[in-house]
Image 1: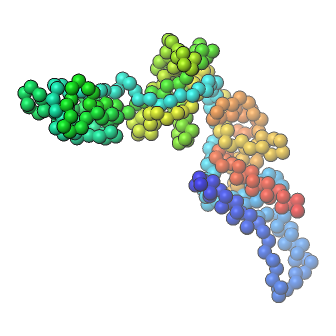
Image 2: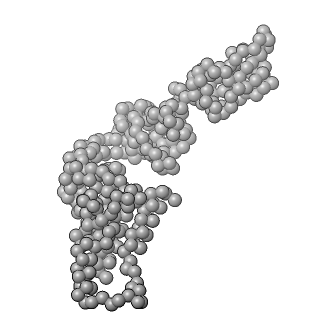
Image 3: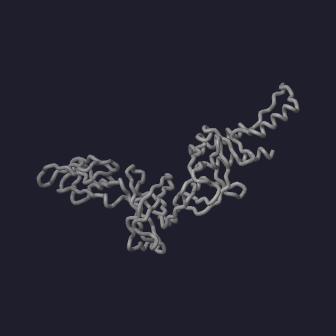
Length: 325
């Protein structure tokens, strides 16, 4: 289970338990009407911590906010992007792949590397004994990278076959499938945001190539994106989605899409106020996959719940239900 989701669930259960009134002990002294009236007035004035009040406010401690994984951000200017969604696959950067063969025909005496091993440039991959001179020599890696193919075993003749393939995976290509109707929209140099639906990762790259011809098998062209992969997070062969930026507009005020909730058919953002949050109605403008423009309701610099705001909505709903009862 997702850690933040588990924490959020536990927080909601804790707050629910805190909001329940405990049964009065059988032997407790009866309260006078005056005392009950005073306590009712105090409860109405202060409310329970973690529950909403009649003004749409919600009190949470700093510990509860941290436990629920509620992330705060500031309302500020942002760029709203018009994008073209595409699908693609991760591929090795073919400009950084080398195939390795023996320099002279001979017998393979030893093999030092296997598929998946990391090698340095000039490091020995195997040792071969030449058929003519009977001298042994090393077959070395032509660049630093990872061994992706091995066709060599001790005792075999090298012949003219390829023995190893070494790939430098510090950069990779994203091969995007581009339909003919969209070809005019995509060109070299455009910014692209790449997403992995399996891992949740995302990163930015640029279009470096658009194929001048298509594939007859799927009737698409290839748009290629170059990605930095120094940490080896993007493994060749896996599928990804991407958004090519077609246009970009700067807006004076925006919040993350994950901050938006709906209360009574109104869009709201939970704004940090004092010791809690206020459900603030907002007027929405343009949006993209990350941000939504605000044309009313918030001021620049105000802090809001940008992540896990649904927890605040759920807790506020419980508070309102309690008031109705």
